[in-house]
Image 1: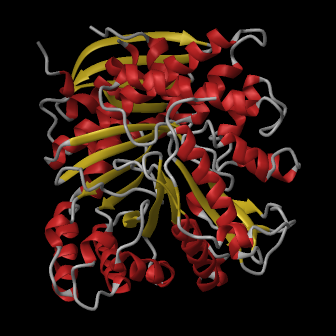
Image 2: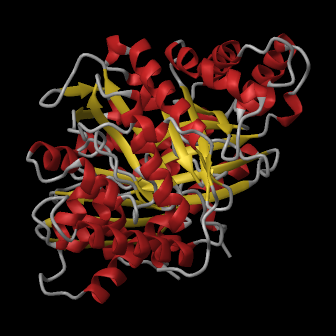
Length: 455
Length: 94
């Protein structure tokens, strides 16, 4: 006998068909710790062989599972141990060579992105890290699927301000090297404070050094499911009621994601890692986090009240997810990328959403300043200032924050950058014209903050 | 007890007409798929049929079977969804 109602079946189908419920990514986290050798060539070979061996069936198995449940699996990805750690024992290390090898392996197994071209420098640099930073722009400009990330600070260690400045230089140079494609290289690079080691989302996915040999991490999304549910609530439904509804939706989405993730992990014969329920928008209409703010009663994303709306949303999503799965991890919450969200783009174009409001929102969202296009002539020191601000929010509030910003070479406020696909398109946003130069060039490390006397 | 991972739910929606159940049942029988339960109703002027089936004895790959049913749906002018049942169990029960 059918023990589920017709209403429940139709609700599930509507979530998928109309409200874009999807598995945003199945990400194979793969340790490269056993690939370290003293030779660039043999390390490269080991990396290539390991990726192509472990991820051989990732795409075909994911397609099969997608067919069984009719829930789209949008991206298949791989996250590697930070390559800076794997490469630095090799003599005359060449990270661009590793980048190309990894990209080729990604091409071979057919994944959409491959992350972990990363470094963890929150307390300072090794010699290898310095070389790694120098080579990030060329690595990103000479690959297609590679994503890169760096961790610049933690609540325990403080923030590496030399790293902040170097990162700003990396962003500028990467944008310059990929200027023919609206500086898209910078869209595949992100810097973090308090980076998490099991995040399946790009550009920041990497396999932490504390992670097992391999695991399958799932990123699931569905902002449209949440916004449509809230739209059906009466306009005077209070915040308790709204929060409960979001929790119920998050529960349903997470259980579906965990089922599919576990089935795929079982099929691949690898451990299931975590499920990351992140309301991650896409440029599609109705797949927008900004639409959730509208459904809650704000005229546009960016209106006063948006930070509260986001705080409540983020918290309710986490609560619903936690109830649904024992292994919620990654970044779980709500992402607020600009270029990937049609509602955010609209709000920016209408002047409702500014850079400063986005920064405020990052103090309560799941990550940070994400996919924001700025004028190509923004000085390096100004970008370093933006990163420093974002690191400060993460460090003090003990949360993950990030910056993925694209200085679009040759474009300025009033124009748009086109990245295509899931990365979308972004109106160039106005930034502060005042200099941060002397401040960001002081260098050194911002000491770890006090974790008491909170106010 | 049946192995729930072999159970599927087929959801058929569209305008009511003669021969829907027969066409779909024939397709299922041709592929060794057993029907365990059927529920039909009219919802907002739409015909809705929900079938619980077992694919244990299915003799072709699941994706091919699903493609066949979807194509049949297109011919009939009906929308047909084929999904493993456990997704509904997980999503709608605590």
